[in-house]
Amino acid sequence: MRHLEPQQMQPRERRDRQRQPARKPSLWKLAALIILLAGGAGFGLTFFFPPSAADRVTPQEADARLQDFARAQPLLLQSIPRDKADAVVSAMDMPAAQKDALRSDLGIATAPATAPLPAQAQVPAPAPTAKLAPDPSARQLVEVVLWDTHSPDGDVVRVRSAGFSRDVVLSRTPTVVFVPVDGSGVLQIQGVHDGGGGITLGVRGPQNAMLMPVMSPGQVLNLGIRLR
Image (cartoon, rainbow, N blue to C red; front, side):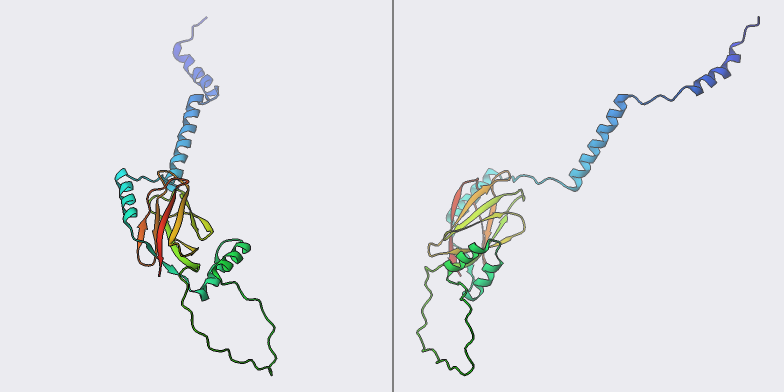
């Protein structure tokens, strides 16, 4: 019998290798690909939608804000005229019962509608009365502007005055808040929620602004005010 030479077996070996099924990628390569894709997706979300960072206030800055607040004069606030106060209260985001209570406190309750008088009826002109000076102790509606002086991380404060309170979520965009005030000359501000690094609040009136001391939840500060 003739022995086959080695080179005569090469074509058959190549045909056998071509018939063999392709090898599947190993599991560790597949796992590495999944991890790579997940990491890329996380980087993309972080790049396009960065998380809000907590406030970073240095000890020197915190001390300066505290000292400035202790030396500050009462903050001048804008008083809303009584003929416009009803429209302002109507636009406030609160239940109707609270709006009615606030109108009553401010003395701007809407008068009930009355039937019109007949055309022939004659109403005597009211007698002239002396014009009374405004009572400085009477409750008035004022406008105050609040904002977050650092990162908008979800800090929340509660503004309290004359039996009224409202929670405000601070942001870098100034928020206008209307609150009633009495003759005490004080506006209370309480820390409600700290998004991280302390509650960083700025308060502004029509002419000047004030950086409040860095607050913690539950802390109450009395802000001296005067009306314009």
